[in-house]
Amino acid sequence: MSAQRQQRKAICPGSALFVALAVALTPAIAAAASATTERVVVNRHTGVAIGGFDPVAYFTDKEARQGKAEFEADKNGAVWRFCNAGNRSYFLARPDIYAPQFGGYDPVGVARGVAVAGNAQIWLIEGQRLFLFVDQDNRDAFAADPGRYLQRAAQHWPKLLEQLAE
Image 1 (cartoon, rainbow, N blue to C red):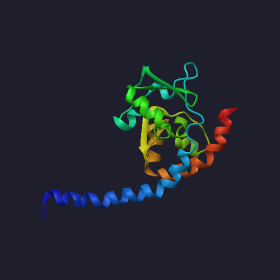
Image 2: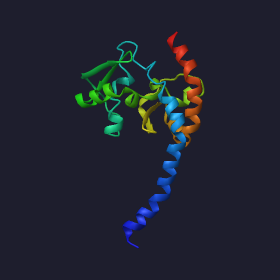
Image 3: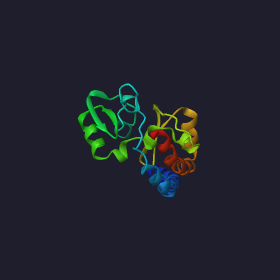
Image 4: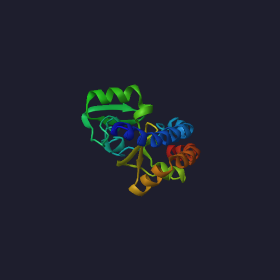
């Protein structure tokens, strides 16, 4: 058997697990995604969302990148910054995809019924959605069992939204 074929064979079991996990999480992620942009973590003085980091860069560049004031957009009551005009266009076309889930609040905190602003430099993309975390411990806990946290977070999020609106 060729080395390439052996490598493919070794990858397949993990790939199947990943696909199964993604399918299992789809309802929880969809529920979480439906309630993400009503309240967004912003700087109370500037109105800039998620510390000025470009929400699209997490997906395109696979890293947290600081946006530029010259590429700003107002959306969902917040000022969003981007690295370039293309990222701004992508975001404006699909903020439901690129904006952090739960408005940038840590999903582990939301799952506990507490709205704690996530840190834009501690992040994870799960189920093609961006999540921000208050610390590495919460990120690791979430990564180990996203379905558990998303289910609980989806239950607590509507009440937290009411509290945030007050």
